Each structure stands twice: as structure tokens, then as C-alpha cells.
Image (cartoon, rainbow, N blue to C red):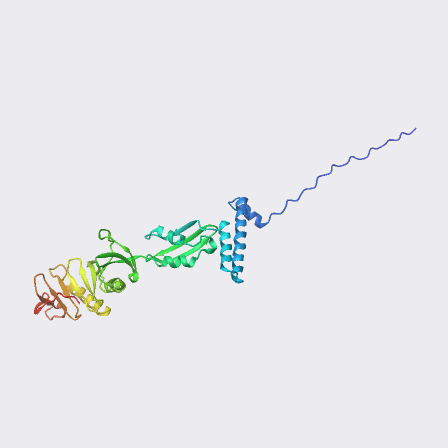
Length: 316
């Protein structure tokens, strides 16, 4: 008798769960993740940017379609109340000028709502100050004005009517200066001398050996210079830039051959560029000083010839 053997069905294989695909991360998302700021901060920035954009479009539309100015101002004020209002001023480039003056100019606004701040008006006001050669004004949203200053550099001291002032190139007035606090700069004296400062610097460049010995220069009669040397002598130069430079070079040459400065003279006169006359204390006559190089007896000391004409102390 045969036996029927029942074979059991093969065991079922366990069903493997399907792997979930990782969502793809966009470049923008990766960039945001890399930023050192939180998502909340980014959300606020995005919100402010949208508000600013909408406000700017609304204000531009109001202007384009001729909507009354009061409505445009109202829109701008609304943007200001939303957070776009000047609360800070950042100033760079200052070295000598008073920083509080710049703050005061930047904040002198009818309204501090950002859309109503006139950047060009702020710049023009800043340029009215002597120290400021140029200014750049911009906004940094939501609440900051950026002001970068390009300052002038003092080039000389101007003395007029007993008052001392720092001046920049082209004679632009900068600020008062006390006698005990005078910087080591050329001193120009007299009405209009500040406007001649550039010409004076060029004059000294013609005779660089004399520059360290010049203490001050007086602009006489709005037409010529008198130079005062550290050793106490005065040199009267002729009118005209070219003639004055020629005379100063000649004086430097004579002083180099046979020293004139520090030798007891009190005044030299070269208003006639062809000759040099001088005077000593207590004398009332001029003395003509000849050029030893033009003399046939150049091996002998320079000849000083007395002139019998009275010397006048009047300048001009």
C-alpha cells in the first residue's frame, strides 16, 4: 500500500520595503543652507525687500501718473513707518573735519523716511564745507545712510588782519589755527595771499635750495611777493610769475657763490630783476651787490658799491 506524501508549499520570501528616494536639493537651497544666518532672518529680509519693492513701485507710479505730491509723500511715509527710516549714519574718510558736523548735515531732513531722503541735497550741503573735496552718499536698507568723505589736505597757513587760518590747494579756507599750534607749513601773508598759494609754491620750486630758509611770504599790493627768511632778511621780488622766479633763481646763485643770508643785511631788493640792491641796519642808502662771476676779477671778493640815493621803506 503506497503512501502519499504531501509536500508543503515553499516558504515565501520576505518582501523588502521600497527605498524612498531622497528629495533633490537645489543649488539655491544649498546656498541658503551655507549662509551664516538663520531662516527667520532670511524670511525677514525677504519681507522687507518685498515691502521696499512694492513701496518703490507705488511711489514711482504715483509720480508717473501725476498723483498729487501729498499722496506720494504719504506713501513714502508709510514705507518709513514700515521700518525704512533713517536711524543711523555711518561716516568714513574723515581725518580732520568734525564728525558731528557731517552727522548733523545728513540728518537735517524734513522727513527721515528713506524714499524722501534727497541724497544729492545731502552731498551738496557737505560740499559747502572747505574740508570736503568730495562726498558720496548712499542708502543701506532698511535704516542707514552711508557717507564717505574725501578730505582736502592743508597746504599753507594764511595770515590776514592778524588772523591765522589753514588753507588748502587753490587757497580754499579750512579752519582757524592758533599761533602756538601752527603746523610746519608755508606762511603767506596779506589780502588775497591765499588765492596766490599755488603760484607761491611754484615760485619756491624754482629755487629749491632757498625753500628751507624762507619763513614767510607777503603778497604786496595784489601784484608781487616779499619773502622773509629765517635769518631775518626780506627779499622784494618783481611783479609777474616769470620775472619773480628768474629773480629768485639769481638770488640763490649769488647766495651760493658768496653767502648773503645771515651776513648782517636786513633787506634785499630785486624788483628790477637785472640787479640786486641791499641795505644794512641804520643805513639810509642802498648798496648794489654785483655778481662776482660777471666780473673780470672774479677771484676777488664780490664788490659792494655804495649808492648815494636814499632807500625808501615803502613796499610796492
